[in-house]
Length: 488
Ligand code: ZN
Image 1 (cartoon, rainbow, N blue to C red):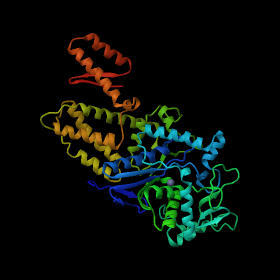
Image 2: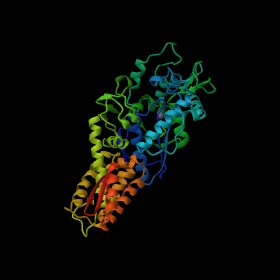
Image 3: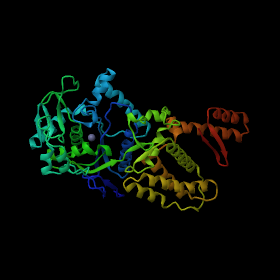
Image 4: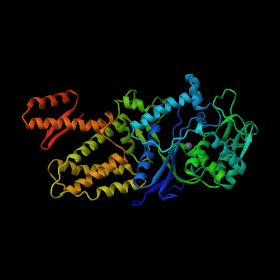
């Protein structure tokens, strides 16, 4: 591979050179949504973060198998081992089949991801479609002696595991302290210790989502699906596992324990975690009244929003921060991002129309390297954006006739901008996204070229008709010395 990628491995707490296990193949697993509610910012950030990684790995020449699961069973309230299944609860409240709830919110999730220009993963496995694999994985852990059956449920024996491996190494928790504070439960619970977690739960009589297993009619524990499906689709060892930082404990810590217990080794070479999003400095939460869904952002229909914000503005806003930094959303910050994106896309459009001269008076030789270096340095998207804005200063000066650019330099700059803006950052102008396709842009260009022709032929009637009618539709048309510029 031409470029060396460095990524921050949450497990070793170090930036490491990325070396795939089976070059050129890369296995990437990201924990996807639990589909029981409308998609919100907490869904957008990991999806966009790992979309950038997916795009960049492919750009580097790797063949990437990107698995992002759909949690549709086993995720109980408060991420705990007791309580109602999140999806079953929603189904009960809305009087729907659990799978109706799943389909409804999955459709909405996919629609939102498409609007945000998040590419579809290679495989989107459902937890409920992999019950057999989860039963087998649980059996392996039982056979290895790191789990016990109790009243039809199967629990992971954290204390025993910790004697042979290290529980808590990802989140940096001190297991001795945890064992101390979670003393034996003295037979009050099925679990030996409260720190133990469920691999399989026996279903209570009112629990609707249930399957047959060697231990009981029941359902898998939440952490089990990712171990089982990651191994099934990416092998016993694979390259990258990602997710939000909120999943580090207990979810990912338990995944590591499950894999080590069943397979004798951690399945994952690099762990990557995106940081969290706050709203006006506060954690996002339904009880705090600051819970904003993506649809509410897109329509502006929320008391905390001054206006609607396009999916591209949300994407750009997220990319303006490094994925390991926290991001604080506010209407003011989004308005600033909106303006920044508009400037970037106007400059990009202007770049397409620049005229080359015999020689360059600007130096653009470093632009590609600056972008490449930033991206290869743990996906530093804010540095990429700043390198593009630096280059835009030259574009504007050339446009104003104050500097010149040669054909070779112009082609190079156009190619770098296309690669980074469109292919890797996945950005496009809002008028283009709102109206779907490039075809629309080409159609407006075509009309304005006909108008130009008409003007040359002094056919003022046609020229005015095109201009007036486009203006009435909301287009802003500007005549320039080389032709025209327009925006919606
Ligand atoms: Zn997971």
